[in-house]
Image 1 (cartoon, rainbow, N blue to C red):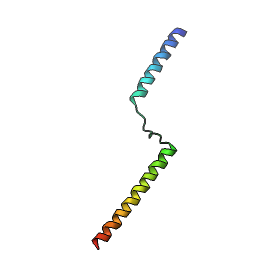
Image 2 (image 1 turned 45 degrees about the vertical axis):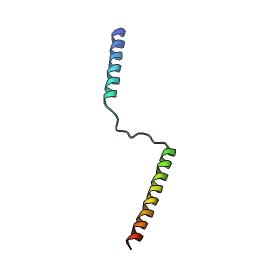
Image 3 (image 1 turned 90 degrees about the vertical axis):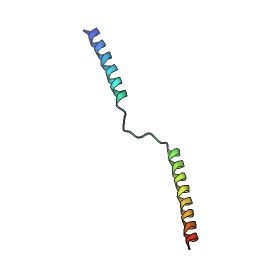
Image 4 (image 1 turned 135 degrees about the horizontal axis):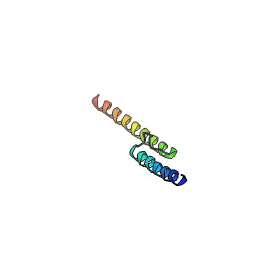
Length: 62
């Protein structure tokens, strides 16, 4: 009985692992604190440069 139980448990374990590989998680990829800070700085730089470009366009229209 123990041998059958062990074999069945091993086979069930393998099936679970195969099924887990088929179903990808919806969890978002982890982004470190330093990476988030760097991305935020880049966004601020882009926002400030866009603001400068908009003011240049307004001045050229007048």
